[in-house]
Structures are given as C-alpha cells and as structure tokens.
Image (cartoon, rainbow over all chains, first blue to last red; front, top):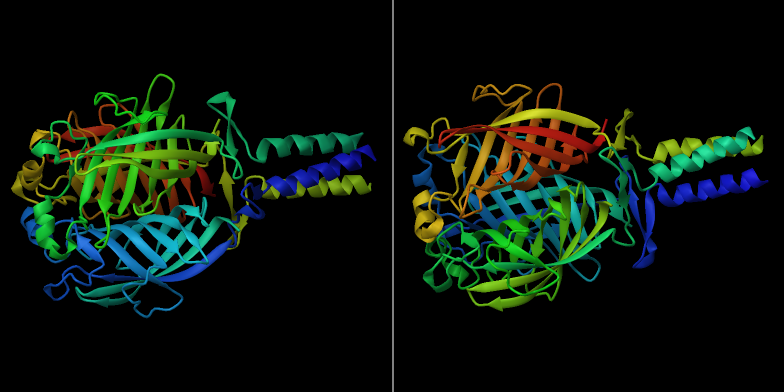
Length: 198
Length: 198
Length: 198
C-alpha cells in the first residue's frame, strides 16, 4: 500500500509539471507546451498602405526611414529591388477576413519594421509586434523572420508575447494575398502557437 | 521491494526533468521554468540622452539613423511624431536607482534600436540587448516589443539571454519615468524572468 | 502486480513528457530541451562584402540604409565609428570552412540588419535570419544580440526557428575571423541549440 501511495504521488506530480503550470494570476489558466498540435491558432491579414501612394502620405500606414532617392544614390546598383531600404510600419490587421479595414481600426495592429534585402529580387525581413487591443483580448505577440517573397509561403518566428499572450512562442506562416504596385499590399498570416497560456 | 525501487527511480527522474536540469558547466546551477512566479526580478532605468541636445551630440547616447529633415521631406504629413525615424542607441542603465548615471558608467548598458511608428501620437518600438558587464554579473538579455507610449505601462518580451542569463525568457514592463523634451528621457524597466538559469 | 503496472505507466508517461514530445508531422522526430548539452551544433561563417568597396557595389552583399555623409552630417561627433549607421545585409554563409563562397552560393544565407552603436569604438548589434535552403536542410533560425566587437568572442541569442529548425532556441558565439578595412569581414558563428527538434 505504501508503494501505491508513492506511485499515485508520482503520477500527480507528473501531470502537474509535464507541460502545464497553474498561473498565479488566474487559477483557471495554465501554461501549455505542445509541439505536435498548436495550443492556439488564428488567421490575420496585415494591410500595408505604402508611403508614396499618389505622392500623398495622408493615408499611408508605413514610412520609409530613408528617402528612396538618397538610397538610390548610396547604392546605385540596386535597380528596382530597394536593397537597403528600411520601412517603419503601423498597419491595421483584420482577423479572419481579408477586406481592407477602415484606417481607424485599431483592435489589432502590426507595429515594427521591415527592410528590403536583396539586389536580385524583392525580398524582405520583418521584426514587429502584433498589438491586440480589443475587449476580448489584450496583449502583444512579437515576431521576426525572413520574408522570402519569391516563395509561396514562408515561416517566421513568434519569439515572445505579453498580456493574454504571456510567454507565447510559435510560428507564423506568411502568404502574399494582394500586391498593388506601390500603393498597397496584404499579407495573410496564419499564426500557430506551440507554447501558450490557455 | 522491486516495485518500490522502480517507484523511487521514477520520482528521481521526475524531479530531474520536470522543470530543472543540472547544467554541465556548473553542477550548482539549474534551469528553471516557472510561470506563476518569476525566477528572477530586477528594476533597471534606461537613460537616453538624445542626439540633438543643444545642437551638440558630444554627450548623446543615441543617434538618429536618418536626418530629421530628410525624413520630414520624405513623409511630410508626420508633423511632430517622427513617424519613420529610426534611432540607434547605446544607453547607460542604472539598477534600482533612477538618478542619471555618469556617462562612463558601463556596468549595464542597453544597445540597439528604437523607432517612432505613429502619425497620430508618439509611439515607439524597441529591439535591443541589455549588456551586463560587472564583476557580479556578465551576459546579455535580448528584448523586443511595442512601446505604446500613451499607456502608463507597457510590456515587451525578453526573448533570449546569454552568459549569466543563458536561455532566459520573460517580460519587461516599461514606464516613462522622465521626459525632458528633446534632451533626455528615462524609462523604468521592471524585468521578470520566467525561464532562467538559477 | 497492480502497483507494478501503474509504476510502468508512470515511467512511460514520464519519458514521453519530460523533455520530448512526438511531433504530429513525423513520428520519428521529437522536441528536445537539453540545457547541459546542446541538442544541435554547427559552425558557420558569415561573409559580408561591404557596400562601398572600390566605390563599386556590384559585388556587395550589404547596403547602408543611410548615406554615410548624411549620417556624418546628422551626428558630426561620431568620427570613424559610424555610430547610428544601419546596414541591411544578405550575406552568403559557408558551413565548416572559412573560405569565401562564390557569390551565388545560396544554400545558407544570413538576412537582416546590423547597426553601429558606439561613439568610442566599433560596436555593433545584429538581428537577422539564417536561411537554409539545401536538399538536406530547409528552414530558418532567427537571431539577435549585441556584437561587442572589442571582445574576442561574444554571445547572441537564437530566439526561434522554422522548418527543420522548428521552435529552436540557443546561443551563437561570434568571433571576427577576418576584417579587411571597408571591403570584407568574416564572422565565425558557433551555434548551439538547447531546444530543438531532432
């Protein structure tokens, strides 16, 4: 009987520590690590209105950190791929639907930087935060990774999170959903978290 | 008796693997994951002396990567929120106390980049390393996240660490502790690690 | 006998959940967390051909995001340390060998940004992705950290990964292996992953 008691204690400890820990702030939530199945999934669309649309920036949601002409002077060989250009953005995101949002839509926004890093082709690199600010969800996800535009889909990393996304990690799969010259592009982002607080 | 032996083996393995692993480099330290209570906490103050103070940069600890005038030309609508400006910094940090440090103070420094990413308000995004270089602590913490200045406090992610902060993860809560126009600002950073090596 | 059965169940569950989880996509791979011994190691060399070599950028693999002269004007006191300069790069990497690669070599590339962040000395900060694109390995590692050039070796963080490096974390140790003025530098990168999918 003594051995049985110890066995049950072992099993209890095991289930407590294996992949979930009760969080101090809420006894109903726990931290999950799950590498075979995501613990959270969502589809978001990022809407980037480029800085030089119709020579007007009144509706733009991103800004080149360098003047294109200055860049062209510094790196004359780049041709049309904007190698070296750094763009700061604060883009509205829509959840589930691809339709362009109203510009005031602020429930989900992507804030950060992307840059063009190839002389041969359009190729980008992203580092940014997704800021959730609705009644249902508050917090941020922080992401970074290579956006190899020539590939149909490309994966970047979710490297951290705060608030409702406390300590999250995962992978976001990007797909170019629309690209309208220098006026607008839309990225579909399928986010799968494998470490999250549920 | 045989079953008891196996039970004890199970319990031993359990305590070894559940949330802590003895590290090869030091048998006295172990890796802890603890999501309900931080495994390490500290309060640091970041001191940023802006690049254009008195038209002099002799004491500045940060540098605009772009000329403000160039930015203003590229993005005329930004008004006074510096949308698109990228700033590189190497700021002294003080631990526990908010007093400005001597500029030579190098025991803790924040090195990296912030950028202004809103047309409507002051809003920033950070990616940087905290470099610890004292006799007591050596190593780095790497952080990134949205600094939504309009909010009283905002959380960013600690996404990694090295040296004494090997493989750390956590959350840093930022609060603007002082803001003196274009000459100086001070951020209070309450860092809580939930994965760390203790 | 009943207790023995339960004990074996406990041990089975323990080995399943302690540090490895069978991944849904491949029953032969599992996720490992191992803080005393890396679960994966590799040595890579990054080759950066600077933008202003011989006044020609035809072979360059990196591009200053700002004109050096513009920077010098904005921050006159920086002298020769390029404080504030942001450089976008897309550098070939070689595995195991330090020899310069052919420029078309694309099996492993480092894509991202570095910036110079000191007025007193050459000091840099990196955030980038290593993109693997060979038949043997596909995927990315995402890294960030302070590259304190004055130190013989310096550690930065591997904060995430995708594809064959799904959810990886670890540390990369940098060492300057060659530095040829403003024409070329080579970094040795010893990457050790402590969380990886094997």
